[in-house]
Length: 293
Image (cartoon, rainbow, N blue to C red; front, side):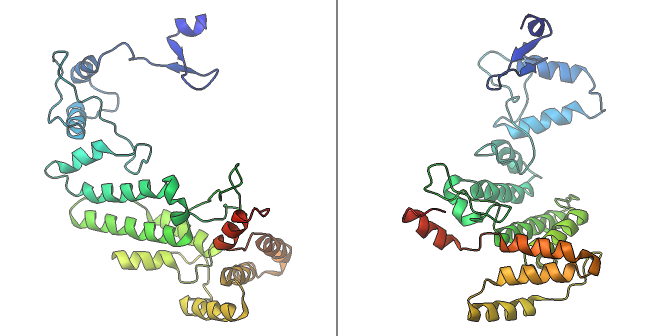
């Protein structure tokens, strides 16, 4: 501890054995701004622009650097990733979006707030799958509730469409910003086709709905389409089968149709069968009755 103190380190508030280096902990906010105004930053950006951004992010319209003790500086504004959901309310983004010329940011704020709503504990059953990423169901320690997993497939598709619409709208307003890149969209598309019985090619549909057109490199020869999915769903309902289960087995067979990959196909199909295929209502009913999950 003595050596750590000599190095200017302080013990972390919550992590045992962790130390924090805080080089400006003894400086006031006003002294930090004074230093930034008097010195150029290492990457050559304009510190005046930085001050303006923090001023817009606070309730104040300017960033005072020489003030009395009763005047608040603008250094307490918090900036980070625009979709960050750590804070309940992104006051900085709200304030910046109110400034003249920044009205386009309101759509970003609306999208961010929707993400924040989706992670609230009381909304988990609305937005999240009752199955974990591995296809199995987990329950909370008190054995009374489902421990929800990733976002439901339909929710993911809705978020993607909303994001693309926001990007299209702000681009049309003159902002040359990409919220999501073609490479990311292509990867999402491949994963959904692989794992989510996505015969309708939802990424392409989302792009079309938002007013974009992206020509994907065809990783797969898509044998099935949305009409095939409707037919399969109808047939499965008649026979009391889960259409996603059947669809994913067909996907696995078709996407790995080389003789050399038979062992992998069988392994993957067994893995699909091993997942929990009960619907959420069945599991909730069993929990209510005190049955073992």
